[in-house]
Image (cartoon, rainbow, N blue to C red; front, side, top):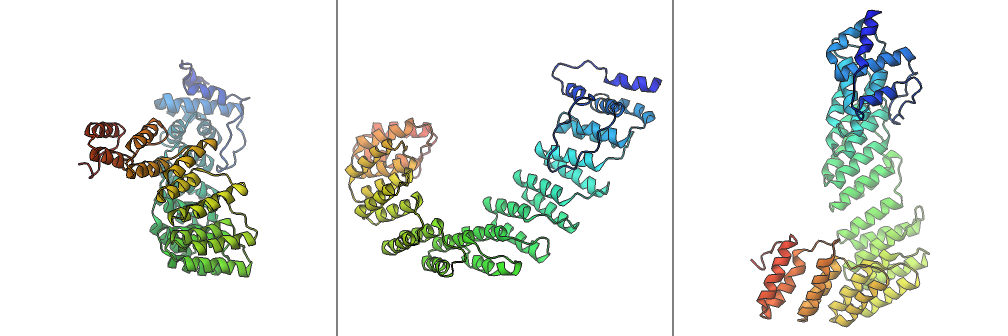
Amino acid sequence: MFLLHNTFLLVRIRLPPHHPLRLLHYSFSPNANPPPQHPSTAPVPAPPHAAELWIAKALASAALLRPHRLPAFRGLDPSPLAAAAAVRFAPCAAAALCIFSCLHSPPLSLLPSEHSYRHVISLLCRSGRHSDALKLFDQMMGQSGYFPDAGFFSFVAGSCTNAGLFDAAATLLAKGSQFGCHIEPYAYNKLMNSFIAHGRVQDAVALFENWIQEGLYSPDVWSFNVIIKGVCRVGNVQKALQLVERMDEFGCSPDTITHNILVDGLCRVKEVNKGHEVLRRLQRHGVCMPNVVTYTSVISGYCKAGRMEDAMAVYNDMLESGTRPNTVTYNVLINGYGKAGDIESALGMYQQLMLRRCPPDVVTFSSLIDGYCRCGQLDGAMRIWKDMVQYRTQPNLYTFSIMIHSLCKQNKSEEALGLLRELNMREDIAPRTFIYNPVIDILCKGGKVDEANSILLDMEDKGCHPDKTFI
């Protein structure tokens, strides 16, 4: 009885009003509701009795504030349920790890439960303490012999992926599969997508092929789409075509997204004819129909190659198929005609955009302005610049660059300076060196060296450093 009384004296400690351990008093009250569990954690065991709750509260308090008093609890022989409750109701990840370590190490050396492991690991992951989480994960499997299910493997690997720990996530997924966990393709796909997004395409491809070879998982259509998009991004279209051929081995069929990725990849490497052939094949077979993205990719490829007649032929096929063009489609055509110096056709596409009620955006107006400037029609460019206000569209850095460069080419330094001042007033745009260069150049050529120096100082104040032109 004396031992029990002496033990509970541990929790009678004066704490500041906002001390985290005050949360324990609430959390361990018999009538308190337990905090919500993370969906990836193990099911919560049956709630302990009131006596065990008080023991759990005392254990948690002692572990955090008086660890040297923990030996006093040996006479109480705390149950694993009380130990799990002490960990589960800790106010934060750091406290949970501290309590877990104290209770399951000498002098108490209580047997940790799987629930405790999973709960603390989940808290550590959500708190960004992945190094501690992975150490505890290895301890759970190595020392305690608990083998997490596929859902928990996927959760920890996904958390590592979100934190940028891609190699650790790959190791976890491989380990889970080796232990017979059937981890869903989603976890693998997410990791591959993250590798690719961070420029590690070759690593993603190597993992993909290794996983398939070792039978760690069966890829789905999304898996192939992710990896095909990655190899297309680095221009390896031949590898993309090989991957499409392999889809049948795993019971997958290319869908519209697969074809869109492939068409875009072909067009990006200037194989627009092959991209168009893929589009025609889709039209003929009708298994998965092309959509606005498919058509727009081919149109864009032809526009970049300066083949506007072919681009318009695909556009007309698009209309005949009943596929509705969107703003991106018209922007591509407007830009293509503008770069070809055919401003009339560019305006015709702009009219089509308005007739079909596609909302113009900054790219639409910038492309028209660029087209006018290429034709030397600055009045038309300025008219479009003013039209942007009507549609509540703000010019971006590219729009300012087009206008300032064109004005400088026609020796209209005052107008160029006016736009540069307007740009400098915009807090949402960071000026770049290439914007200032033509203005400084025209001022120097006009003998306005003091004004040029003033612009140069403004430029440096904005964090832009002179390039080789003015050094």
